[in-house]
Image 1 (cartoon, rainbow, N blue to C red):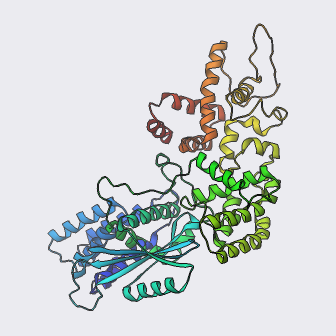
Image 2 (cartoon, one colour):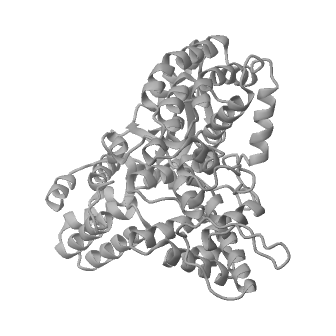
Image 3 (cartoon, rainbow, N blue to C red):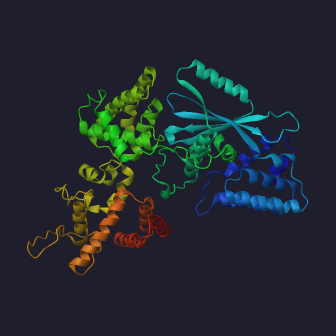
Length: 537
C-alpha cells in the first residue's frame, strides 16, 4: 500500500487524492475473518507501518487517514503519526493540507413520486483555492438511498460538473409529472445521511443496532456483498467524511426523527382502512385485519415511517423479501394477502395523492408479483413441525423473528398438552402465563388447596428444574419466572434473548439459563444496568 501511495505524491489536486485514498480504505471494507477485527488489523496496521517508514509516502498516507479515517481512534492515531514524521523533518505533499477542507454549498434530493430511491446531491466547495486553477471550485457527491431496503446507501459517485448535473435534474423535474427535485436544508441532510451511513455500516460489518437506542428492524434480503461490490465501497470513507462537514442544528433545535408509529397509531390506521370503501369487498375480515397489520408494519419499520407510500418496487420488496423472511402467514392469510394489498394500494394512493397512472402501475405489480410470491413464500414454521394451532398461539402477531424466544419462554405452547384450553393457557394474560409456568415447573396448572383438593397433573417430564420448598417459596419462584417470561415474550430488552442464546450455545441447559437470567433481571438497578449485565453474560 505504501508503494502504491508513492504514485499519489505526484497528484496536484486534493479531490483526486481523496478519491484515491478513499478507494484504498474501502479495499477491505466489509471483509470478515473469524476471530479477526479486519478494520483494526489493516487500518491501524497501515498507520503503524506508515509511521515507521519514515518516508514522504507514509506521511501522505497518514494525512489521508487523518481526514478520511473510518473511526475517531483511527484518525487520532494517524494524526499522532503525522506529528512524529514532521518532527523528523519530512514534508507532506501540497494537497495534504487541503484534504477534507471543504464547505457545504447546498444539498438537493432528486427522485420521483414513487419514492423508492432518492439521489441526494451534496455540493461542496474547497476552502482553499486551487493553485493551478484547473480544478473546478465545486464538486458534488451523489449518494443513492434505497428506501425499500430500510434507507440503506446503495451507490455513490462524484462529479465536478455540478452545473450540468443540476440543470439536467431540473429539466427532468419540469418535464415529468412523476419526477421531483427539491432542495434540502443542510442540517436535515446531515440527519438523513447519518442514519443511512449508520444503517449501511451495520449491514456491512454485521454489527446489530444498540438495543438502548430503541427498536430497530434490520433489513431483509440485503447482504454485505450487495453493498460492497460496487462503487459504494470505494467512496464510503469519503462520504462519511463529507457528511461530517454538514452542519449540526443550532443548540436547542431538535430535528424531527423518523416517525415512531406506536401500536395505537398503527391500530387506528388499520381501522380507518378496514372501514373504507376500498376494503368493503374483502370477505374475510379477520384475515384482512391480520394482513393489513403486516402491510403497515412493513411501511413503518422498513420505509422510514411511511406506511402510506406505495409503489411497484415496494410491493415486490414486501411480497418477495420482507414477508417470507419475517412473517408466518396462515393459509387463509396467504389467500387474502393480494386482495388486501390491492385494496391498500388504492386507499393509500388516494390519501397520498398519487397520480392515477402511478396507482394503476402499482396495482399491476401486485397481480404480476403474486404468482412469484406463492412460489417464493414457504411457511417458515413448517420445517419445525409446528401445527397451525401452535403457530396461532406462539405468533398472534405473525412475527416469525420472535418464534424462537417465545418457544423458549413457553415451550408448552408448541405441544399438544395445552391444545384443548386456548383461553386457560393464553400467554398474553397473567392467568394464562401462570398456568403455563405452573405446568412447566411442577406438572400441574392449578394450585392445590386444602379445601378444593384440585391438582391437575400431566404426568410428563418438566421443562424447568422445580424448586423444593414451601408453597410460598414456590409461588415466589413462579412470580419471578413470570416476569422474565413476559419480557422474553415481548422481546424487551432486545439483548435479553441475545444473552440467552449465547448461554445456550455454550451448552448450558434451559433451567440454568432461566435461573441466570432471572437473577440478573432482579439484581439490576435500572434498565441500562440490566442491559449492561446481560451483555456481560
